[in-house]
Length: 300
Image 1 (spheres, one colour):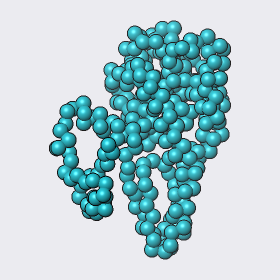
Image 2 (spheres, helix red, strand yellow):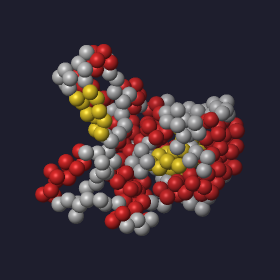
Image 3 (spheres, one colour):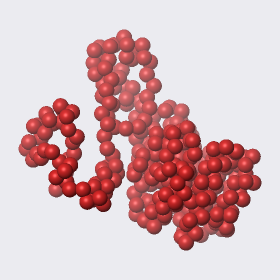
Image 4 (tube, one colour):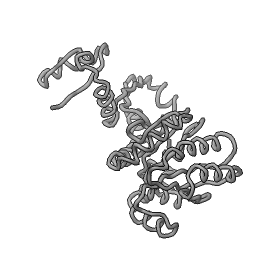
């Protein structure tokens, strides 16, 4: 986690995000790309195997989006560049700009200038580029293989679909191309989530909670994501600490849940087993504490 945060800080990603308009204007002038249309961004090495398979999956999806305005910026290089170039140009003639390998600062500026990061992530173990894209304020459309869910939160950092589902991947990109407001909302929540869950301050706070607890104490980590490094002997065993976690839904996740219920016309009476008014909060929390029910709060 500390390595991730250090890389993000060194790359200047938060600063690049703040200067988005300037980066976009400079990039448009230098590359001759229309700044009025959405820019899709990819940052990945071009090598045989899973990376090439990801580029091929992306090309298959983009070929289904020729009726929309967009331009693809590709940061990366490698032995498979000729094959990758051919498949992307065949899928999107005249819509692809190959940038080659970029240094950290230029990559941060490119991400900040873009509108949407797109990457099928075939067999992706972690997805550092997707984490950095979100830190720069880019929502992500990604394939759902392996470690992607560790760095992209569905409905908060972007949209996750099957890496091999070209129509589904195309539909996810189209959804955000067609809805600038949703895209902007995801951009904000993606950047906030990365800062909150993958920043040094979060790790430090969790570690401080563990080290400030008394012997035989209990420490609770609330919410998803993030990493923390502990000295097991010093921090846990010698103090006989109990470490528990409390999983929570993000606001974006709650919105997705509400849409799921509404779109499928699921009667709320089938979902809600108990109802409480605000002055019955203590009673409600006693029930929640039994962990025999789910819990939700609706404010009118």
